[in-house]
Length: 167
Image 1 (cartoon, helix red, strand yellow):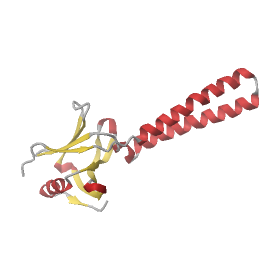
Image 2: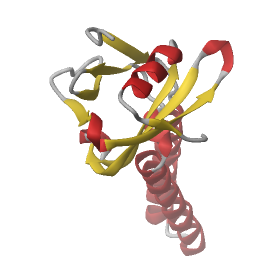
Image 3: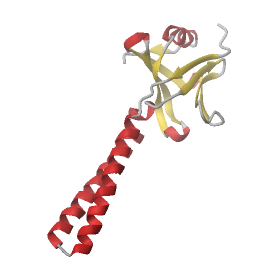
Image 4: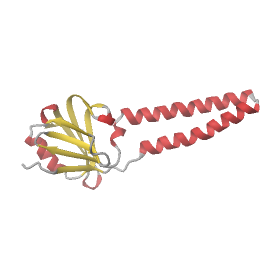
């Protein structure tokens, strides 16, 4: 099988994490203004309420950031390019292609496929140990979200004796 130029694009166009962070930041501004007004106004009870609201918004913003960073939500971003070659599996962003991740075929233990609408699928590639995926952190797996032509990818994995597991 000729693996030259075998690419998959993950055009999920999911901005869930970004939208949630923007909502949190949009709530943070009025809560800080409310805190400032109550602090200068002298009403202690109102100021305590403003501190509680501001603290809650800050905690929720941190939680949204952590969830986006440490869960599979991090793979739902626009335009990640995935490629296979004779030496292994690669991925990079469409914007910064100087930074990329690679794994040798021996480092990949298995993969799973979850079929979605319109012939697209989410493919998860599992590694034998934690891999440093750059800005995506250290991961035991990589998700290829909303990709097409899954049959070709499956045949590549079968050629390399990588087994399929249930999604």
